[in-house]
Image (cartoon, rainbow, N blue to C red):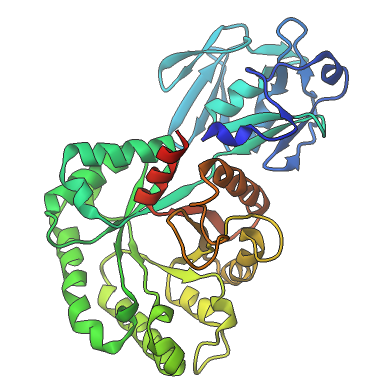
Length: 411
């Protein structure tokens, strides 16, 4: 995950140790590409350790943490995503979820403001730091929410298989897994996996769908899958239940898409409404995978685009934005804009998906050729640009197996 920090022209030093030339100028801090303006006490370089020190309150707020002050112990208490941090001025370590974690430099009081090492507070609050020599500022990047697909649910039948997937998810900051429904896999295997994932703060959604699902003729084969999930949800405790439905129907892959697109679109819309009725009462929200160009297709019988119409029928979408460059024409950022705007107007959330498997369409559609190092860099660039959009919910990498294989190639 931290390989992205090896940027060309970016100098990284353990603990963010500054050279004298940089230390002599005003310290600039940017969080997700937005420069911070410190109101009370500005950042400074500790003269002994040469570490950047920043105001705890403003830095914690910028990183999304809740900060309180315990007067009885003179400690600051931070909370973020279930994590609790307690620290006091002058102490060489802090308590993170009850365990002592050493600080690079003890917190210091400066004009009644608690100052802490920038790298330490950033990393403990799940962010990453790099020094940008060209702009003379510290770049802080919050962790990208990530999701991935697991199409072969037989992998979860063994404890080792479950552990391998969840360890990979932990190492790559994945907080959502789309797990295929296979009725030949026992409910106990699904329950064990979902329970373990929940302990790691990973949500698991029931994954299903094929191009032919969009057609009315497929409904009889779809009903047993929907029934299986409903029965499963009713028979297991809350900690073993799916967190939602994730449907991957891609009818534009059907031969009929080129021969009678209007009919396919109409049947697709009918099927989406039918699915909503069938799933009503299950307590599961629905998310659809859609291609980045779907806003260019009009939904028959409406004034809306097909992507806007699907957003109305669902809890959100994942844009299959299969490009391997972030910026520029036809890049990840450019291609996401239209559907992100549609989602914003409806108050829905969008994830941006990229591909890691071999793809014969063109060299620009997958990171298979470019590798994980460049993928992390491009995703970080896209994340920094998109994170200010209210509808943006993070990145999704398709899929677990090809992503893991790409990682192995890089080792």
